Image (cartoon, rainbow, N blue to C red; front, side):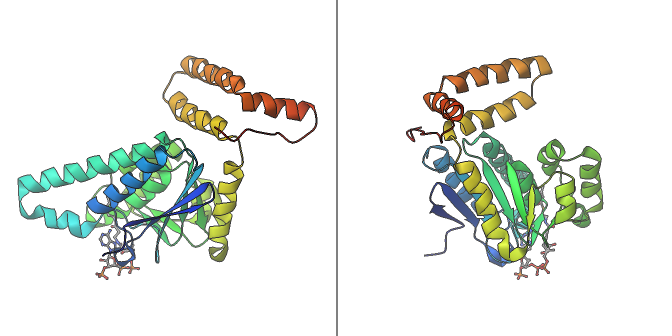
Length: 265
Ligand SMILES: C/C=C/C(=O)SCCNC(=O)CCNC(=O)[C@H](O)C(C)(C)COP(=O)(O)OP(=O)(O)OC[C@H]1O[C@@H](n2cnc3c(N)ncnc32)[C@H](O)[C@@H]1OP(=O)(O)O
């Protein structure tokens, strides 16, 4: 039996998902995208898991779409166009699944995040990178302007910086990626796993019902007018206040004691 393309490992309430195709630098083939989609869809139903870490096996995080598979589809023009459309549709669905998941998702990046791999980082809620990791959208170097990654990237990074990445194919180092808002934290390579786990555990320790409604509101409000965004987030605050665990959290603060949350949420 061949190795799974995506490995799931639960460490308490944190789930680690590992892209596991090191031979082609975890390229996002049809099969890889389907395996990751399946793993995420299962996690969406799993309320016990509070945070997801997404990482890559081998030398790098992810080298983008599978160029071998994309080129092989070229043999028949009609079939090729259909295969490419299916691939980009599948990838776009996956990228939209990440912000819609109830749990925060942290990308853990080492080595390189290229093209669709960089898009994946931008689509996660947070990212932690090794200090020698590099980020780029380098399709233009082989004549392929990476249009789909611009959607997520231009929503988390300054637009001129994204345009420069897309048109030069140049890579940013981790320090610069942090400066422009693509990633949150940078750690020495040998501490990357621990640094990401620490961030995950910090989030996992919070009241998960509050984090879940907060994550949903975070993305929903971003597409609204300011007036509608305040209306929506105000309603979300009220819903949050009605949570019995939030009542306990505020009482605990006022009574100067730790909260005793009922972990049934
Ligand atoms: C809208 C979005 C579009 C896209 O995502 S298009 C894809 C854009 N991605 C790229 O253009 C990256 C292509 N890869 C590279 O440029 C290089 O790799 C790297 C700089 C990432 C790393 O270079 P090095 O360390 O020298 O490794 P290596 O020998 O080139 O790669 C190791 C094996 O991995 C395969 N591989 C690498 N990237 C891909 C890929 N994107 N799709 C399919 N296979 C890939 C290679 O061919 C090779 O394989 P073998 O050992 O059999 O020769």
